[in-house]
Length: 321
Ligand code: GLV
Image (tube, rainbow, N blue to C red; front, side, top):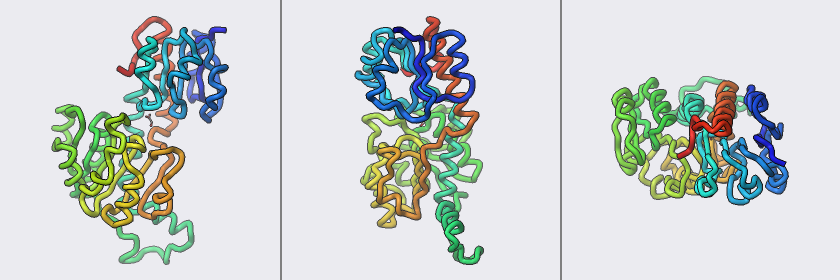
């Protein structure tokens, strides 16, 4: 049987209703990713599929959907869960959700900067554990001030630049480094310096990772890169876990070379490297960069708009090129 649209996970807002107004929709109203074995039944005959990050879209997925599939709409800006070449080979359009999650994710990136540098996770655990030591103390839980320090943005796309704007507002200077040149207007507005990867590592007091995951960026921040970072500096990652070699990061923290880290993403989510789990100087969040009601509603709405556009024969709003 053909079905217009398959939505593989529960979506907020009116995205599903809007899809239903125009198409037959098979809606799996559940949060957890679909067990791979259930995909053939769910996907068969789909013209469009709305997917979330827990789903891997590969040849097996595309086979399960069959030849009628026209579009895969990812409810995320990153699309490393999708084999874009395999989709392209079958003429399947891929879309993502850039723009609508920029501020929410940059908020979490800068929250992690503050949490790591001011030791907020450790402080909160101390209070909850009842070992607060009576509160204020001259030498109690001293952190590092961000004012006058340099943030290094690895990957100055929309989220990286939005994080840099927050850093400026907190009195930090901005270094930018990436594969493509950042928007000149943003560079001027941020009074930023554009530098190479190695200089970024050597000069940043806080390195914030914003590159997408690809074969070229997997373990880009490896043991050698971490060794180049300034002694006493911090690492924050809100992009994708595998960009950072977690074992090497744990070693760099263990040796005291790095002062702390803040991570919203992990190499093998939801698993966290055991050498990081036990450390007080690492802040760990469960991939909540875009997790606000407003942002997730906008992401779902944009994914629905992309599906509606493709099925109506129009250009999608935010195609992956
Ligand atoms: C979340 O990680 C996203 O890519 O949107």
